[in-house]
Amino acid sequence: MCRHLAYLGPAGAPADVVLRAPHSLAVQSYAPKDTRGGGTVNVDGFGVGWFADDGYPTRYRRACPVWTDPGLDRLLRPVRSTAFLAAVRSATAGMPVSESACAPFGDDDWLFSHNGVVFGWPESVVGLAEDVPTVDLLRLDAPTDSALLWAWLRNALREDVDPADVVRELVVRVAATAPGSRLNLLLVGRDVLVATAWSHSLWVRSDGPGVLVASEPCDEESQWRPVPDGGLLVAHRADDTTTTYEMEKIGQPEGDGRT
Ligand code: GLN
Image (cartoon, rainbow, N blue to C red):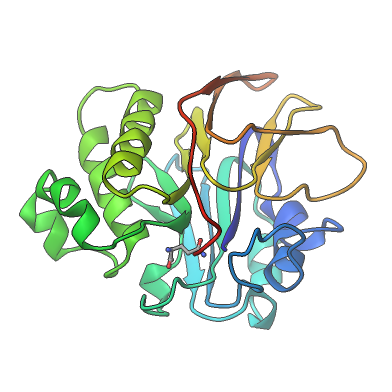
């Protein structure tokens, strides 16, 4: 089961939580503590994305275990960003191991990650795919459940909509047509972060002016709070000193532990 994290707040260093923290994302890739029956390690690739100084996202993805990338530490060392997302992947059986299948997925405005699986893929989400413009389906990053979820979201986000409403709609809809799916989503924009906990763990830390969410707490010192299963978390960055978040329950997942 993939592990992922996202941050919104004053400029922070992705390297701190991706590489340096005691239970960093890199550690979670080979020694996750809470897999809930969903695989053992997350070695099928990784990705880090951040909103850069020009206001647009930069993404770096590779189809190898995160600890084997010789350039990542140097690449991330100088990076400071007000909004970032990172993920390590454990490919669902039958889905390809490739760079383009690794989160974050994204465009000029958003970064996205999916930890989980869509049951009955792909038949169970044919209706969802029918909502996605054909040209976007032809340009799908990879033939995976996560890439389709992203294509649907990106299309919905082209309208002037509340991103939390769009994420909520996606989870409720896929859970209805593909029951038992695990739909742990992270969506990060310039000033907003939306996350769901749907059949897996998600934690939130907000002990400073920023908000960090992660599949597993990255350290034991900070004030981590669990996001209840079936929960949706929305964070907004008002300015450099204020980022707030709210949580709501959007439903009751019925996951069975498979990825
Ligand atoms: N199903 C997704 C993929 O194969 C995510 C996998 C996971 O969370 N383990 O990329």
